Image (cartoon, rainbow, N blue to C red):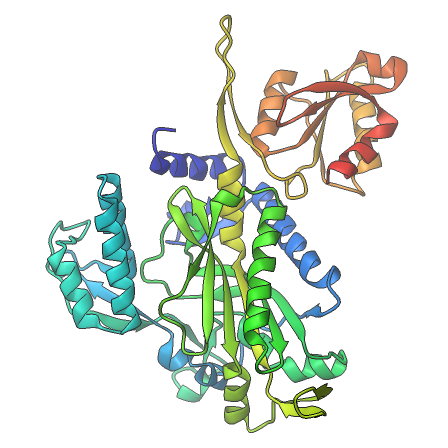
Length: 486
């Protein structure tokens, strides 16, 4: 591709054309920053989710999973600080009436500077912005915008309002009577609080011993004023979060542990290390004593993919204060410093939080490749999605050479034999070459062709997506061969 903007647009178009992601309610002209996952996208998303869940809960003895409700008692969000602190600094352009998140506005200008070869100026601008955000210096931020002549993309002017905070929670009403303050509830802006309010339920019923974690995958909702960049930033999204409860004083050790563990999880998928980097927070959230992001190099640049936060005991302590119910754990282990049991304490928490939709975009954007396969005698190319086989929506496509002479029946028998183990796909339309290209575009690791030789010796041709190499194998070996790759 000529540049990353074109690449990103190509990925978005490909995602729609091949059934990965559709604009929501498209027949009614859509709904901004809301998307539906199609037949291929829902499979890829589920495979990512299942892989995370298995690695967190099935392969570990110290993490269990829950599924908490989206609606929670409204006091939950007062205790968590979301009612008072869950805000983004916003600024409006007086000429266009367009509203911007301040950090997005400045970052977009920094990207423009980078494109013009002004790397140092861009870095200096972002550093200055982060320092001012950390200090909540809105006057300084507005001055920074004006001094750098950061204009509105619509009006082209620098005629800005003062910066102010905007709460990101969606409010709704609970019950039959509307308009009463007591009925006001929120769509959860994060899944973490469902874990915290169930800390003692899980600890006692599961007889869990600190340190231990609680994992959850679920929907969250944020009223993003400037939602953009495809599924990177949406108003309805899905999170994969784990809260790890630890003894006070050990949180920094566990923070370092989970920081490394989570990066290794990403790399184990086969995504290259140079696509990742850590970004330590300058401004810490009100609940944290340490925080960093794992950033991924999307076509739109390095952006946050996963957050690791040392949340101290803030959440459990707040819920204890607001609910008037103790959120303490009795630790029988002996403190070597005193020779006595640690006794009662409110655990500290280390959080890992990854956006499932962002992980989907990371996998999709890295997998997408446009390849020129031309030879001196022939022009040829293909678009291929090189998904890790374990994440691919379809693992194996079975393609009869034609629609007659018993070949479709053999192909369907192969699918019936294998579909209990992994997702299979049958297709008989078009030439075998066109079917290969379609499976490449869907990211299918293996294509199996059933031909006339199959009827003679029970062998088939299996084609490998990445190398396009073909080999002849017995039908009896197919299931094991694909399972080994997965």
